[in-house]
Image (cartoon, rainbow over all chains, first blue to last red; front, side, top):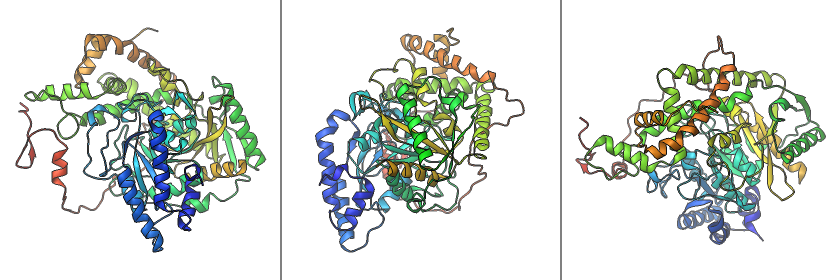
Length: 478
Length: 97
């Protein structure tokens, strides 16, 4: 039995019923990682000893009928911005290359309490800033479907780890597409939760009014199992509302017949790859086939989302990154006698180009004389983008759109053209700015076998609906 | 495309952001940042008269939690995060002024 190709849901059943042990599952994934990750580079740190110990404890629970959750005994990976006591947390930046967190992030604490087994930490663009996992200080993550191409980003390590059968599920983060984008490039399923649905405490921030933490796995059903364990209020993250967490696995079983799906054709029909257009047309046909109603909608301000994002996010980034000054944590420069020099040299040596670019843009848009012209105008446009969604939800239950305009591009492409890289997120930025949820999942592929994803966007705190549509579409296909 | 940001502007921004910036780096960043800032001009087309600004999307306000004191037991781990000398359980740094 090839365990690593199975879904989280399938493995969870096999383990619960006693057919396989967590140790067997864990060892199977470790063998896969040891054989193939030297080529892919999905992991920056592995914790195999910890994983085997955790698996043995899960096995003991299984024997005593004391399993903690469907994730008990299931090997997972965490994007390397999620703080863990078990090993270093680097944000894939030189400035934190040896950082050992003294505490666990809430998301990891919850997964650990659910019995999940930690295989290691996955690669990301430095501090999650990028759309290709090429700005990591620990090298590029290669796309398991074509090693000459990028895995997408920034959660490229997590998405590649799922595509390469290295773990049952992985945690990613998204500020502007960083879960859905690599899921599209790698042919896996990634859920961008609504802002506030999952606690960010202990997860390194990029842009605090946008950052979310969410699951990446083989299927929407697997994502539902993971979300169940990580969603909910956390007193340590004041943006998590104290509202009920639905039973996701139960909710996704319902049919989507008569559901109203909006398609904002004017927004995405210009400039997308022909293959991507075909996959979206096929998804539309499938939804009709399944009894859903397709309704054309407009998101008139969506085209401004990337520009608004690249003002708002760098503003927040320049402020968030100020904490890396070489004093309390992280690497510190050798200049020990002059405080200003410690700050400046630590930051200049520790940060890569993309982080520096965003800090510089953020400093620019927030500086006196420019903040009204750029920053505040972007915040007003953000309001209009959110209103577009509010208007859309009066007529439709969900929105179908491409994840990004093209399939995975070649390694090295777009690196010296940051603006082109930023446009990778054009279909992802609107929902992020508006705090909506969305799921990216496989919709088809190019002739050469590169995956192409589709995305379903739903209103804030309606993850069960996004998961349900994706699950029903995945079930219908297989 | 005309760049609105000169290498000197980049150096000034870098100084504000506590980043060291060589002439070579400033020359590389200036056109890149210029392109990005030029891209922002698109937002000028949007009529935002009487539109309020959005800084967060949850609608939550004044969220507090219980003001309870709990003893933090891992002081040493916290202090170990710093590479600077430690005196009396405090991180010692050069004089600020």
